[in-house]
Length: 393
Ligand code: FE
Image 1 (cartoon, rainbow, N blue to C red):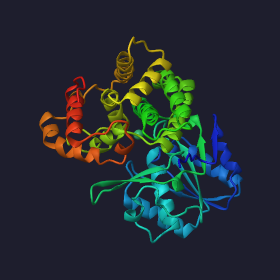
Image 2: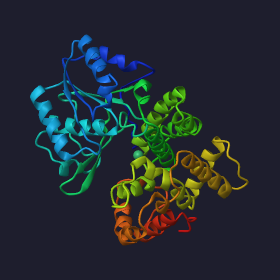
Image 3: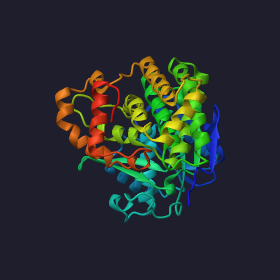
Image 4: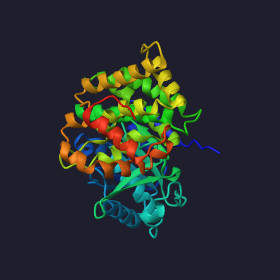
């Protein structure tokens, strides 16, 4: 049996933040990040709309990037004190991810991260509150996904949480919020969304319901990401929807080893932190070459290339054309083509790569990758990524 789960309601269009007026409830906790939503006036507007709905709001601010276990526990405690019937989170991936985890500990104070680490093993939520997500960046699509990533800084590990229980009830996808994104963030989050869509389309658990969403997202991102980066706000709006479609696809079809590699290298090198979307952008063309050995994956990459109007007389030529298109986008955004070019020190890379390769193979995203991989092959693939050489693994 396969399952396809999305939020019950999705509001979109400029100014649709206003939909908060129509929520039915008594008390809402509004979870936000560092302050950009406040600075641009969206927090005040949200609280005003909720007031019009007769809902009393408690603001929980200061969720850090890569939210910690402590922040989650603090938020859950605030919820237990205030007893909201709505959890509303507005901002980038971090506050929304944190709020999803707070929700679990609000409703089940006695559970632990250890207990909910097994994918799709959560207790039933919505006994106390429903969840509304309002994204301000165009990439993670956490407003429609079953995922959340929380960091345990004391242990130095990330907890990737996955369960349809934490798929939000309502997503408010208002492009006005995405207009506040700086250029670099627009590029990185956009390339993250492209990676979501491509990985979902070739995933071993891709389904008839996720394929059209993945393809449409790829088409829009190919057409609009560069213009959005250059400040075209109509393109920015299209990107906000495209990343959300990509999220609907990968929440149900899962991802692949581009993400496994990005997860395990983001904070691994002292000579360079690699933002999630930037890591995906660098790795994606290499992973496509690696995966194209698999017949079904190759066919699917060719379908994508043809849809984008790329030219090639053979399957291999089409796959290469797709990789070239991704490299062309990266170059446009100033994203380097290799880890060496990114500035990761060679000695540090060589010292750490055995361990990183092993960890990447063990990542939750590896299982749905179209071609299996061993630690030795992962190391070889990473070596190509480091030096920028053609994949022969
Ligand atoms: Fe991602």
